[in-house]
Length: 199
Image 1: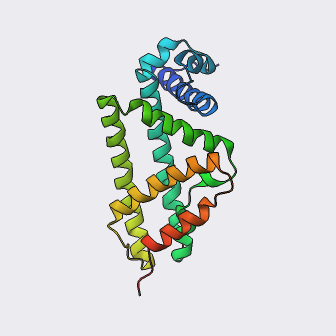
Image 2: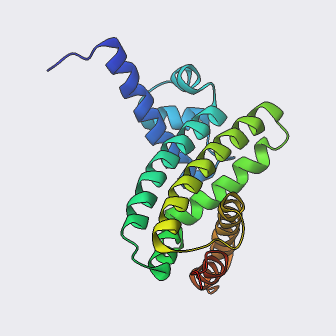
């Protein structure tokens, strides 16, 4: 058996805690999930969570950062395969609207997290900063593909990205309560309006 270096051990602990945090929060919700439960799921003590993330909020922020990076890569790949406006619309539709219970629970957990940290200025500022960085990256990717496909946004792209993110989040919550609402059709219609083909 190969012994890991201290740095490798720390990385492994970090990654295991991150995976456990996502699993527990998706299963129980942000508010109900506890540090103890997350640590136990990863096979560590609660001290490991505090050491690596500073607490549940820090763990959440790290989870979202990892998801944002993966999302950007997948989005760029999907947009690169789009050959026209409708292909771009399909690429922008989040997979969260598939019949995926975990995605629905994650959307609800996200709403819980945002409500919980809204009154914590330092954490809220970190959330806003991370969101803005991610949105700027999406704008750059989307701008490149809109130009390639001859699409002229009806609003400045930074506003388009904020609108689509807010609408997607709200619709994910709505679908969690009302599975009959056709959120894919709603989002497709909005994307088609805000990213029209040049005439």
